[in-house]
Image 1 (cartoon, rainbow, N blue to C red):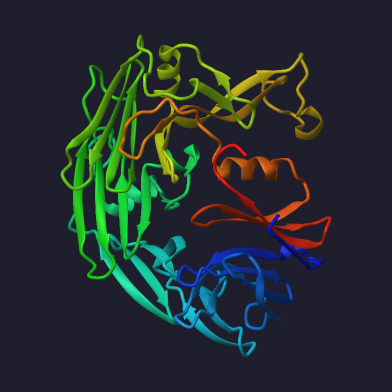
Image 2 (spheres, one colour):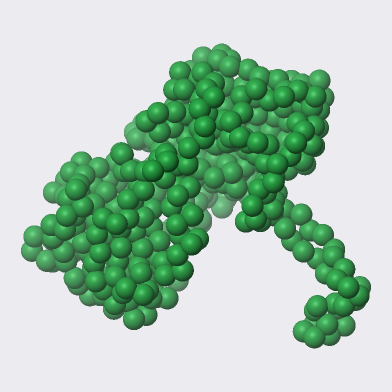
Length: 444
């Protein structure tokens, strides 16, 4: 445990918390928004409390806390959103004078919808999609100013899984964008998305994998608004792919496509498109680049081993495939697999458990169970893309989620990743305090 700050959130169900790092000064901030007050805690890089500011929720009552940015003077700005008013209230908080300044930003939600929002390099970004125009808008909030970036995709050609031509908006409506967390482990249920957004300094990368045959990638320069299209063709197998996907990581594109008989996995150089590594695994092969069993997991139950590659490929080919790439100071970690949902009709001992509640429920004795499940394996590589037999040590994120699952007193958890470790911040409902704990990769 790094620190504990006593605070009594009497109405905790309507409270919010947020952890943040000023990436220039490396000060760590905690924002605790109760229904009638806001507490700002400022810690130095060693997590010693340097300053605090407790103020009212004036102007932002009943508004949700979206995010933050930091000005050049080191003071934070918070972004409070109201869907009803279609606006964001920006409030800059001056810790030296214990004052604040508010501005209102009208979000154009009549003609656009919010895709995502995020922080990068002390700035706050809001990304929207037009309802009619084939375009995105990025708003960059910096030093109290909002700069609008119009990103036009109308000149590009898009095709769906059946190679039918579609508009940009149609593709995104069918395959909503999922933002990947830069520098963090992205779980399998997120990376199976067919449209993924990667956030880089002054740059976005959008990958579209709705086609089984290729990855359509757009490199978006937020300074000059230039959009460059790149196409990465999937390697052909002996049979057509049933499912495919990609993942971008540090100037490499990782691609996978699967059918019941084989798995094809390529690592390609982003700039040249050349294949750096390529693997073909048939259903009768042993997967050589693997550091874990072949696993199948239903809901949150303990994963079970799938003994044969053929069984793994059969299950994976029926799911949405995906892969996640994460790097720490030592190694590169790849998770490859797929996830999906299955609805099954079950019969329980001749008794329909819904009878008491549903009256004339159809097919008495049967009910539909909607179950999520996944299959996957883990692989550990060196940073030079050489396969290693190193054991897959737990990541800080793994330990944080295990800790949350086993501690019922945790409320409003936030995870902040720093250079050498991650911080779990949360409200402890028993201790009536805001707690910050440190977690690191590897075995303790």
